[in-house]
Image (cartoon, rainbow, N blue to C red; front, top):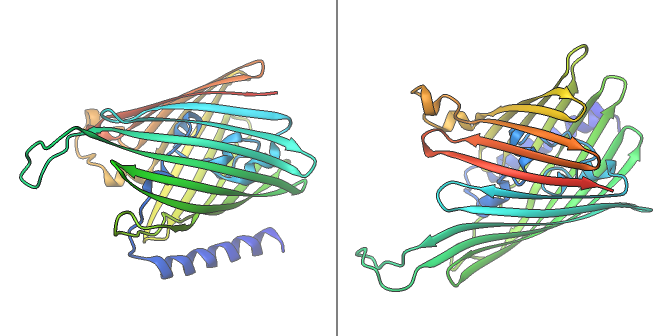
Length: 307
């Protein structure tokens, strides 16, 4: 199967899933939360990247480009008192690249109230957990595939729900054009009921491209996301290569359409992201800030290395 037929099959599959699941609102929304500082700076446009340990949360086919051992850890400073973090690691073996990742999100403390708004006891918390086990394999010099198996847990007070999900992706590389195309299906699976409510997972399809422009120190990243509950997103970002050891990144996604951007000032950059990557020896430091308009901004810090 050549690339054009593969992408056509992928798009047809996307349409069939959208027809099947359109209108059903999903649970486990945190599965679509951006997990890394590098990914956030790129506005999430990571599906066409290769050789990234972050493929454990983006596209498992990206793991196929890893040589040796690679790891990354990230801290997320969310809105209000919410926060989270993750740790991921991948290693090349004789049968492909294997990876494991862990992520957590803490939503802070909530006051326990009765139906009249009166305090009735100690505060309670809410949190999410995610474990991802990934495998990437290079079929040929120009195409790689991969899969993630994920277990997620969502917890509110003493109540909880669990889910098992699958990611499957591909990355096509054209080294002559310095171009990669990636895509896949993500968060495909099932969950048990949260108390009495059972929601579908936020299954989505992604297709993206990354290209280093000729004669310019700029890499463009474009990505489209089709969500099976009847929505879509568009992501775009540019990596400005200041030097071999320092990149500036600016991104924008269609979340801007869901935010109030009628006023200038604090709302002007709604849906946008800024960040940088600093590389020295085998280490990389990433930082990203993402704007949600009047609601505030989210900051992420990342540290990664390869051995």
